[in-house]
Amino acid sequence: MNISARRLKKMGACSDGLDWFRENYGTKNVNAVDALRLSLRQNKHSDCNWFLSTALNRGNKIRYACYAAKQVLEIFEDQYPNEKRPRQAINAALKCIKNDTNKNREAARAASGAAWTAASEAASDAANEAARTAASEAAWAAWAAARTAASEASEAARTAASEAARAAWAAASEAAMYKKIIARGIKLLQEQEIK
Image 1 (cartoon, rainbow, N blue to C red):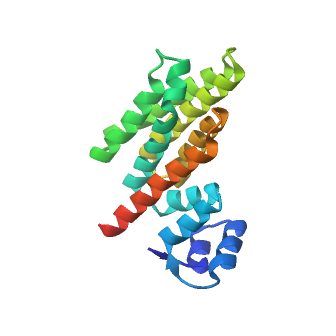
Image 2: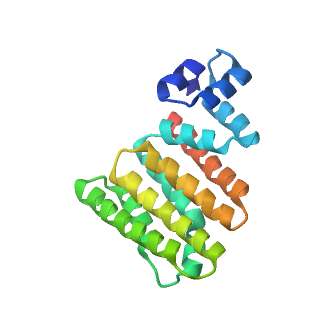
Image 3: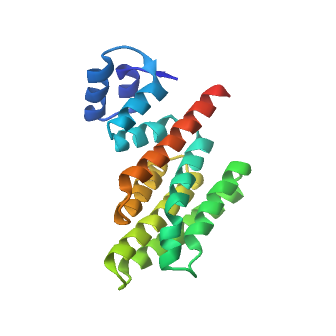
């Protein structure tokens, strides 16, 4: 996939992102993967996340969101070992990839509501604040993954990656986690282009 400043503007890119693109590429058409890799090297994580969440097809948005949520699920489950709602939300989302029916979307919607409740409960827990923050952000990531499967929203896929990064930030590894998630998104984009 090739991109240009004009195409990014049509996709709804923010002015900062458009300025960055123009500074690096002017008005040229460039390979999206190459631009993503440069942006990632320059730690423009949220811009990479926005582009991937916008450019990926529906199935890959769900894969991207689930991958992000899975990266931090352990943070939540370490804090709440008997709480299964975030994992169930991720599994419900993945089920939509295999069989995208109204029934599975409705199950993902219900699971996202349950993950939302788990995240809210974790956020208000009186336990250690840092652990509580990381755990609740991980649960929000699971909520967003299921929400991606339940709807067509790119925003939900973006949210899953950002919430996962925030969970990792609370666990002191945000940049590394964001890079890992975005690298997976780039791979999904490349696979999507091959098909």
